[in-house]
Length: 211
Image (cartoon, rainbow, N blue to C red; front, side, top):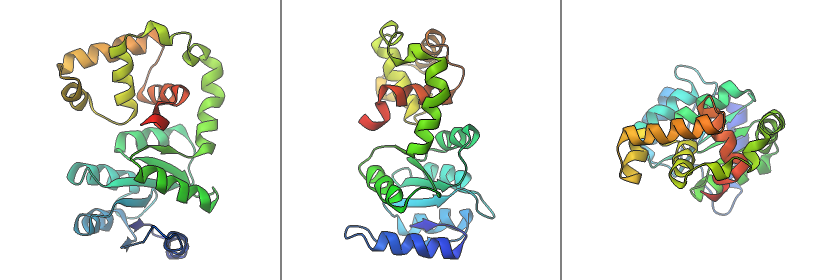
Protein backbone atom coordinates (compact mmCIF):
# COMPACT_ATOMS: atom_id res chain seq x y z
CA UNK A 1 0.00 0.00 0.00
CA UNK A 2 1.19 3.53 -0.75
CA UNK A 3 0.80 6.52 1.57
CA UNK A 4 2.06 9.62 -0.26
CA UNK A 5 0.33 13.01 -0.56
CA UNK A 6 1.92 14.04 -3.87
CA UNK A 7 -0.07 12.37 -6.63
CA UNK A 8 2.71 12.53 -9.24
CA UNK A 9 5.21 10.90 -6.87
CA UNK A 10 2.65 8.29 -5.84
CA UNK A 11 1.88 7.39 -9.45
CA UNK A 12 5.60 7.02 -10.17
CA UNK A 13 6.10 4.70 -7.21
CA UNK A 14 3.04 2.68 -8.19
CA UNK A 15 4.32 2.17 -11.73
CA UNK A 16 7.72 1.14 -10.38
CA UNK A 17 6.27 -1.40 -7.94
CA UNK A 18 3.67 -2.81 -10.33
CA UNK A 19 6.41 -3.39 -12.91
CA UNK A 20 7.93 -5.99 -10.57
CA UNK A 21 6.68 -9.56 -11.17
CA UNK A 22 6.19 -10.27 -7.47
CA UNK A 23 4.75 -6.95 -6.27
CA UNK A 24 1.39 -5.22 -6.57
CA UNK A 25 -0.01 -1.99 -5.15
CA UNK A 26 -3.38 -2.85 -3.60
CA UNK A 27 -4.23 0.57 -2.18
CA UNK A 28 -3.13 4.18 -1.99
CA UNK A 29 -3.88 7.15 0.24
CA UNK A 30 -2.77 10.77 0.52
CA UNK A 31 -2.54 11.38 4.26
CA UNK A 32 -1.51 9.63 7.47
CA UNK A 33 -5.00 9.42 8.94
CA UNK A 34 -6.32 7.61 5.87
CA UNK A 35 -3.25 5.35 5.92
CA UNK A 36 -4.18 4.03 9.37
CA UNK A 37 -7.82 3.42 8.43
CA UNK A 38 -7.27 1.88 4.98
CA UNK A 39 -4.36 -0.31 6.09
CA UNK A 40 -6.54 -1.98 8.72
CA UNK A 41 -9.07 -2.86 6.01
CA UNK A 42 -6.64 -3.99 3.30
CA UNK A 43 -3.97 -5.50 5.59
CA UNK A 44 -1.10 -5.11 3.08
CA UNK A 45 2.20 -6.93 3.56
CA UNK A 46 4.08 -3.63 3.38
CA UNK A 47 3.22 0.06 3.43
CA UNK A 48 5.50 2.56 1.71
CA UNK A 49 4.87 5.57 3.96
CA UNK A 50 5.87 9.15 3.19
CA UNK A 51 6.98 11.00 6.33
CA UNK A 52 5.67 14.48 5.47
CA UNK A 53 1.91 14.18 4.97
CA UNK A 54 -1.13 16.26 6.01
CA UNK A 55 -3.47 15.53 8.96
CA UNK A 56 -1.17 12.92 10.51
CA UNK A 57 2.49 12.63 9.49
CA UNK A 58 3.99 9.35 8.39
CA UNK A 59 5.88 8.64 11.60
CA UNK A 60 2.83 9.16 13.80
CA UNK A 61 0.74 7.04 11.42
CA UNK A 62 3.41 4.34 11.59
CA UNK A 63 3.35 4.35 15.38
CA UNK A 64 -0.46 4.05 15.46
CA UNK A 65 -0.48 1.27 12.88
CA UNK A 66 2.16 -0.75 14.71
CA UNK A 67 -0.03 -0.60 17.81
CA UNK A 68 -3.20 -1.89 16.10
CA UNK A 69 -1.69 -4.00 13.28
CA UNK A 70 1.84 -4.98 14.39
CA UNK A 71 2.28 -7.55 11.60
CA UNK A 72 2.11 -4.92 8.85
CA UNK A 73 5.64 -3.88 7.85
CA UNK A 74 6.22 -0.21 7.18
CA UNK A 75 8.91 1.35 5.00
CA UNK A 76 9.20 5.10 5.47
CA UNK A 77 10.11 7.39 2.60
CA UNK A 78 11.54 10.90 3.05
CA UNK A 79 14.00 13.54 1.88
CA UNK A 80 15.31 14.17 5.39
CA UNK A 81 18.70 12.79 6.40
CA UNK A 82 19.24 14.20 9.89
CA UNK A 83 19.47 12.16 13.06
CA UNK A 84 16.27 13.63 14.50
CA UNK A 85 14.20 11.94 11.81
CA UNK A 86 16.08 8.69 12.22
CA UNK A 87 15.44 8.82 15.97
CA UNK A 88 11.72 9.24 15.31
CA UNK A 89 11.79 6.37 12.82
CA UNK A 90 13.28 4.02 15.40
CA UNK A 91 10.69 5.05 17.96
CA UNK A 92 7.81 4.64 15.50
CA UNK A 93 8.50 0.97 14.82
CA UNK A 94 9.12 1.24 11.07
CA UNK A 95 11.14 -1.55 9.44
CA UNK A 96 13.03 0.66 7.03
CA UNK A 97 13.98 4.16 5.94
CA UNK A 98 14.57 5.13 2.30
CA UNK A 99 15.50 8.53 0.90
CA UNK A 100 13.38 9.92 -1.94
CA UNK A 101 16.53 11.17 -3.64
CA UNK A 102 17.94 7.63 -3.89
CA UNK A 103 17.68 5.58 -7.08
CA UNK A 104 14.38 3.75 -7.75
CA UNK A 105 16.24 0.45 -7.44
CA UNK A 106 16.98 1.36 -3.81
CA UNK A 107 13.26 1.46 -3.02
CA UNK A 108 12.71 -1.95 -4.62
CA UNK A 109 15.67 -3.38 -2.71
CA UNK A 110 14.28 -1.91 0.50
CA UNK A 111 10.83 -3.43 -0.09
CA UNK A 112 12.33 -6.87 -0.69
CA UNK A 113 14.52 -6.58 2.43
CA UNK A 114 11.61 -5.57 4.63
CA UNK A 115 9.44 -8.29 3.10
CA UNK A 116 12.07 -10.82 4.21
CA UNK A 117 11.61 -9.66 7.79
CA UNK A 118 14.80 -7.61 7.94
CA UNK A 119 15.38 -3.94 8.71
CA UNK A 120 16.57 -1.59 5.98
CA UNK A 121 18.46 1.69 6.21
CA UNK A 122 19.25 3.69 3.09
CA UNK A 123 23.00 3.35 2.29
CA UNK A 124 23.38 7.13 2.27
CA UNK A 125 22.20 7.23 5.88
CA UNK A 126 24.37 4.28 6.87
CA UNK A 127 27.44 6.09 5.53
CA UNK A 128 26.43 9.25 7.39
CA UNK A 129 26.06 7.32 10.62
CA UNK A 130 29.39 5.54 10.15
CA UNK A 131 31.17 8.80 9.32
CA UNK A 132 31.40 10.72 12.58
CA UNK A 133 30.35 8.07 15.02
CA UNK A 134 32.83 5.36 14.12
CA UNK A 135 35.75 7.74 14.31
CA UNK A 136 34.66 9.22 17.65
CA UNK A 137 33.85 5.82 19.13
CA UNK A 138 36.36 3.52 17.47
CA UNK A 139 36.10 1.14 20.40
CA UNK A 140 32.62 0.18 19.17
CA UNK A 141 34.21 -1.59 16.24
CA UNK A 142 35.03 -4.45 18.53
CA UNK A 143 37.49 -3.48 21.22
CA UNK A 144 34.73 -2.99 23.81
CA UNK A 145 32.47 -5.69 22.44
CA UNK A 146 34.25 -8.31 24.57
CA UNK A 147 33.39 -6.39 27.73
CA UNK A 148 29.66 -6.88 27.15
CA UNK A 149 28.01 -9.96 28.61
CA UNK A 150 25.95 -12.16 26.32
CA UNK A 151 22.77 -10.85 27.98
CA UNK A 152 23.82 -7.22 27.52
CA UNK A 153 24.51 -7.78 23.82
CA UNK A 154 21.17 -9.53 23.41
CA UNK A 155 19.32 -6.65 25.05
CA UNK A 156 21.06 -4.07 22.81
CA UNK A 157 20.21 -6.11 19.73
CA UNK A 158 16.51 -6.23 20.64
CA UNK A 159 16.47 -2.50 21.40
CA UNK A 160 18.05 -1.72 18.01
CA UNK A 161 15.35 -3.81 16.34
CA UNK A 162 12.65 -1.69 17.95
CA UNK A 163 11.46 -3.83 20.87
CA UNK A 164 10.33 -2.17 24.11
CA UNK A 165 11.82 -3.12 27.49
CA UNK A 166 8.61 -4.97 28.35
CA UNK A 167 8.70 -6.96 25.09
CA UNK A 168 12.37 -7.83 25.59
CA UNK A 169 11.64 -8.98 29.14
CA UNK A 170 9.00 -11.34 27.75
CA UNK A 171 11.31 -12.69 25.06
CA UNK A 172 14.17 -13.25 27.50
CA UNK A 173 11.87 -14.41 30.30
CA UNK A 174 13.23 -12.01 32.90
CA UNK A 175 11.86 -8.92 34.66
CA UNK A 176 11.69 -5.46 33.10
CA UNK A 177 14.04 -4.25 35.85
CA UNK A 178 16.62 -6.83 34.76
CA UNK A 179 16.39 -5.61 31.15
CA UNK A 180 16.81 -2.01 32.30
CA UNK A 181 19.89 -3.00 34.30
CA UNK A 182 21.46 -4.83 31.33
CA UNK A 183 20.72 -1.84 29.09
CA UNK A 184 22.19 0.65 31.56
CA UNK A 185 25.33 -1.43 32.05
CA UNK A 186 25.89 -1.89 28.32
CA UNK A 187 25.36 1.80 27.57
CA UNK A 188 27.77 2.79 30.33
CA UNK A 189 30.47 0.40 29.05
CA UNK A 190 30.15 1.69 25.48
CA UNK A 191 29.70 5.36 26.39
CA UNK A 192 26.22 5.48 24.84
CA UNK A 193 23.73 8.21 25.65
CA UNK A 194 20.62 7.44 23.58
CA UNK A 195 18.74 4.88 21.56
CA UNK A 196 20.24 6.28 18.37
CA UNK A 197 23.70 5.31 19.73
CA UNK A 198 22.45 1.75 20.19
CA UNK A 199 21.25 1.61 16.58
CA UNK A 200 24.59 2.95 15.35
CA UNK A 201 26.34 0.27 17.34
CA UNK A 202 24.01 -2.36 15.86
CA UNK A 203 24.89 -1.18 12.34
CA UNK A 204 28.61 -1.37 13.11
CA UNK A 205 28.14 -4.93 14.39
CA UNK A 206 25.99 -5.94 11.39
CA UNK A 207 23.08 -6.89 13.62
CA UNK A 208 20.39 -5.21 11.51
CA UNK A 209 21.44 -7.13 8.41
CA UNK A 210 21.38 -10.40 10.35
CA UNK A 211 17.84 -9.93 11.61
